[in-house]
Amino acid sequence: MHLGKEQIYKDNNEGEHLILNMREGKRVVVGISGGVDSSIAAALLKEQGFEVVGLFMKNWDEDDNEIYCSAAEDLDMASRVCQEIAVPLRTVNFSHEYWERVFEIFLNEYKMGRTPNPDVICNREIKFREFLEFSVKLGANFIATGHYARTRKKNSEMQLLTGKDSNKDQSYFLYQVRQSALAQTLFPLGDLTKDQVRAHATTLGLSNSDRKDSTGICFIGERRFKDFLARYLPSNPGEIRTVDGDCIGKHDGLWYYTRGQRHGLNIGGPGDAWYVASKDILNNILIVVQGHNDPNLMNKTLRASKPYWIAGTRPKQSPFRCTAKIRYQQVSQTCELYFAGPESIHVHFDNEQRAITPGQSVVFYDNEVVLGGATIDYSG
Image 1 (cartoon, one colour):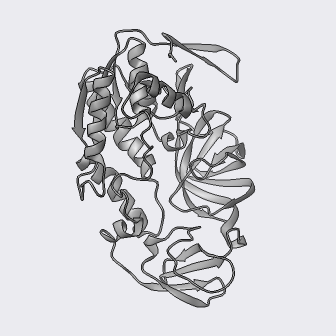
Image 2: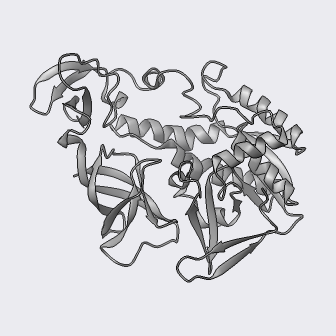
Image 3: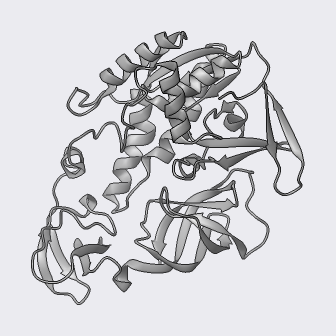
């Protein structure tokens, strides 16, 4: 399982092969998390003759202990694995930067009744900015991560591509990574499946070969999300009403709920389960419906703002036909984009989408090429 001294990619549009030379002797700093993915990314690069340095990033200090955040355990595993593959490991603390440029945005979005996507912001501000800048100071020519994604150079443009393993593809979270950062980033796992990665870790005898993948956000850990959020956003009780206006319960604060949510509503009674349909921010009312696919949860259109285009410019045609995802691991959905201005996009899906959620990302694709994305404002 080798990358090869040259990685060859096929251009689907022109049928040409573009060769990205990766010469030996180049220093690459790999973000090491303690998980199997980043470990194998480092191991593969070392096998190819790169001078590999591991870097463990600590991004959270507040309320950091063995119950809520596994940073100490992760660092211990990262140290063990780096010894096993014989690469040096350095550490850096980006907690201050994370708080100011990721977590404060996270809280402000919830205050406005939206559901933010901190992974997208973290990739933009920390992993592919702070981490990159710090790595350059260490003499790095490239950085690398364990993301399941790929890049390709086409003319003067760096393209972001989906990972070959559709079940693990993480390009959804990378759509705001800058051109300059993509040009200095290697994704060694982009052409591999998760099974191949674990098999290679087993072959190398790595301590984390069967370690469970981390899920969610580190600073929340194993506690309930609502309990964590309550530390920063106080309770603000209000009514839970049906779409017909009947009051059927009480909520603790609109920011504790997201569209399509079922659990935590504490609504009894006969019939189908209840789901969050929308939030009346002005009157502090949570609106709910019965049934997983109630019509009030389904929409074919959305409006999004704050677009980011990886190529630097948006598509010239309007409408523009492509595919899009409104959540991670969703199958790409066919749609048309209408550009209402430089900062506004109307997305019209061919089929209804369930629980389009304000604050989340809508990411656009042209087959395997990630075009960019935007932040969802509202649906319908």
